Image (cartoon, rainbow, N blue to C red; front, top):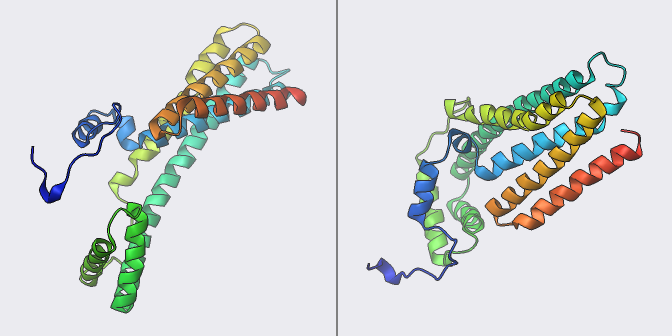
Length: 246
């Protein structure tokens, strides 16, 4: 296969997908990983697990003496993660609206600025976005084209939400609440609430290691490194809670 402009693929590691493989993989993603980027989805799951562990680590202070401690534990974890999932989901909406408003302000600033200054500013943004992969001439050409396009754009005065802003809300809720499923089942199945609490804590810490490991592999930060960091974090949380009688 011939490549224009003297292009030839660089040697890559065996586990690096091609662009075609990335496109096919994106098309086959389940709904949850289309609503949220895989790394964001794993981060949401991790946040949910941290919330569950926080509830469990402080449970000894508020469930003892309850008529049904196990039910109180399970409902507390579920309610906390549901509330945080809703809050975090709407933060995605706020971020999307802010980003559109910021783009509109940037376009208006470019229109109000001297062309030379606008090109220099956007060239810096192009270099930042591409990691300085472009030659100075190419980066300048891209910046000049962006300035020309911005000159003919009329950004809306009022920014509104769009339908595409809301799938991350459902994704954040589902992932945060799903962090309570296995610990909740464990709590409800073990008869003694203290044993249930200890088992649920161990289960959550193990799940934190797993999500950290997957996050590290997805982001290429390093699966074992991020997984171990999450494991240490979880064990430290439990240790501090036990130190203070949790």
